[in-house]
Image 1 (cartoon, one colour):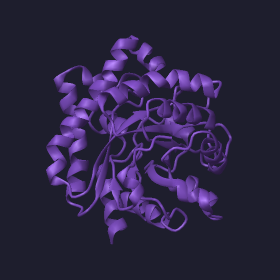
Image 2: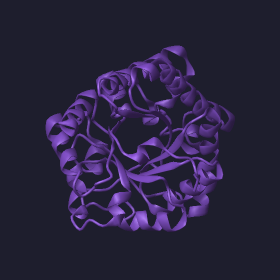
Image 3: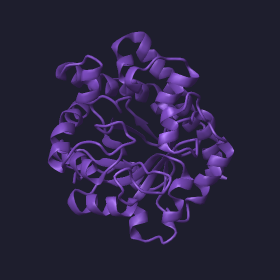
Image 4: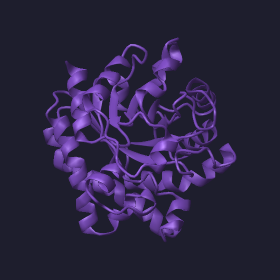
Length: 311
């Protein structure tokens, strides 16, 4: 594991953004083939569209004394299989990941003086599959080899850390953890869970985290693309393993992944109710301090979460 120290490990509140892809598609009317945001980096109009997405969240952080911000790249789909479907070769895909980081460097320069807490640049690595099904890769070794080129490109772009997001199995998470070690970057691993609190692979959250920690421990763990009600019951027993969870990016909706996959309208839920669920996680997850959103969330949800958290 890299020896680099992330500021969020020292505690304090860190905010992040919401559901990038769902906001662009359903609220802004932006077409995202394969649900991929990284092709927007191809031209200035697309890059400005991404900047406009990030800025309200950065403003929310600027309005929150002493809060830090984890600014994440639009690269959830920027890996080889999805890139191939979108017509990218390996060199073009690597450049897209680098360009995504450069966009964030520009935003950090723009906002650094307005924030009173640290601003961390996080390079997002998504699953090889669709994020709802544990269908690939077949082994830890396959996962490491598959994800290493993206990890290297994000490093070359100049991220502070990597984030493995919407992980559906411990095997893929371990592979990315090994890739992060190879490029010498700290890593946050974020698992997704079904309505029964288990990963799509069938593993419990605790089991998956233990497998990763036994092989290549990340800086911390997170949960994303799930509503708090989907996994909160499994936290009742507590324990040291729960203290490894620092981040949470909830879905606005209580629907299952299968239901969301066929939905034709965006379910934005109730921002205030969602914020209350975040607040109730503070007891079973005492280290939780990196707060963002996932599918269906936007700046309204993050504002409600922030307001509930600090009051």
